[in-house]
View 1 (cartoon, rainbow, N blue to C red):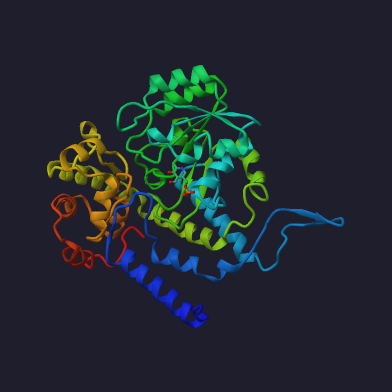
View 2 (view 1 turned 135 degrees about the vertical axis):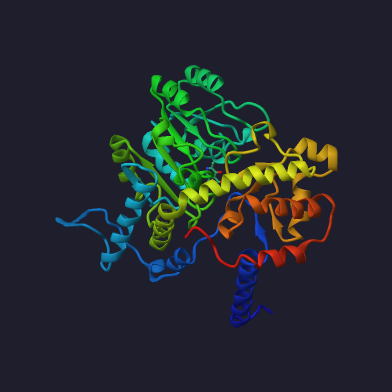
Length: 410
Ligand SMILES: Cc1ncc(COP(=O)(O)O)c(C=O)c1O
């Protein structure tokens, strides 16, 4: 017999409550792809905007020119303008759109209007920390692009100027896409941009992972260092609602991008998300520098403490990280502890400590909770005891987690 609608409603309510308790109050999130929203931003996600449309794109209907297909939009349109203006200020960019619904769609918002048909991309391969979406079988396959490898060096998959420039001169792509899912260190962007512009290639900087750091003025400043377009997800190191944004200083490019978005890349842009994103942008205008500096300081302090405690990490020679991520050294983890990153992450999960299964540890959300570099030794101790010595630390984690009921930097 199928369950009644009422039973399913009760079950759904209890699943959402349980999720909110588990992820929002009773565990530490160290997944670098995630963050948590301020209460105000979250409230806007649940506002009336969640069910509304606006489409401020002129259309002509039987000789009549309309400035929108919908009525009732007087506040919605102002919210979007406020969000775009805030994005322009935060990233010091002349042009901004907060419409992309995700980091992936922000990438398409740049690629599809700017690349010629059958265009060529130079992108970091997924095996070297690059985003899977740029691999031949995904975005390039859908849009008929060719993709060539932008090479990286060493186990941290650092992009170095010389091999990158060689690849740009050899491949002469239409666009160089920078940015990684495994992203520890900034790029020699000035040199790369100079070589790209010499061969007529655009430089597109996918900051999906590091957008919150760039907003706070740390990591690197892509638009000043030569990137033509900067885009990314708004929910990883950037502590906003799930979505994306795109900014540029180049009017010629923005004029090509902006009209392409509606009806080509997406239609509805989810205005409740844009209101929530506007709030996060304003919070970052207020507190973004302190937030971003704390995140990076956390990564370096946590890296040191974990490595000293015997958990093998990459990048020790460079202080482990300049971002919100740390990377486990898979080979040494297996050799020294007989563990894969998946087994380690599952073990930690049972103790209320969440890292990802592919070997990344993130420090952005714990910074939002109020943990700074001074707390990283204690966090490392819990990770080491639970992960390497199989100690049951869940009760201790829960007690500590409860000391941070409110988010900082809002
Ligand atoms: C470098 C990079 N670009 C794009 C994306 C896609 O972002 P989203 O999940 O917001 O679509 C990701 C996701 O992890 C990413 O790591």
